[in-house]
Image 1 (cartoon, helix red, strand yellow):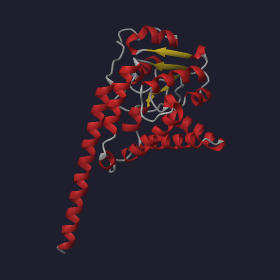
Image 2: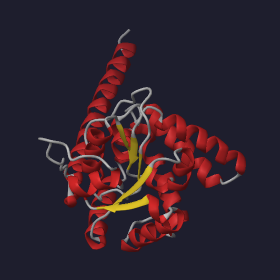
Image 3: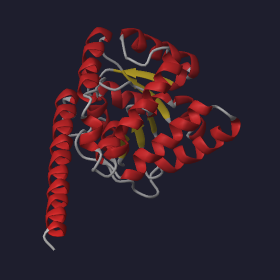
Length: 259
């Protein structure tokens, strides 16, 4: 989790809907769920940036259908959402956290767990994410990378969903507060758990009715470091691919001119 995409395992029972926003410890939470649920976890941020191209394209289709809002679009959205999560034990991070009502419909037995943190610290952390994804050159750099060529349009769809759901596309602490209030409206009280990753195994195991793993420390993954490292890695990959493309183009032009 965090810097390695999960691979679906056919036959895995879906058990947990991760309702926490990005930068609330979702990478650590995902790794813990993999242990407790004994199955792969779909961490949306990781899968969108490191997973198969099909996954980010399917999220784009799901988001477009959600934004369109018609009954036929909703049917398509539910069908694609089910296909996207087939073989996973849980989903965490956004946009999964914005599809809680739909996921509860698809998985009526799944527990809804929202990772939380201090709203002020969350707002500052989200600003760091936004700064890493808004450089004007990013779309051009990512263009030659399969999958990542869709990343900026995908972010635009995410922003549109957040604006429709929370009233603002740029995350602030009010976004955080509105998300918590929204969850309390759409999730039955006996099905919703709020969890802070600093609580570790005891609180999470109690929520899921599992025993604390022996000799397995609770995973702690720094989301900020993971985002920075992944961002830098993709920029390096994109620039390297452009060097190859430009070199090949230059060689081709030189060959044509000297024929």
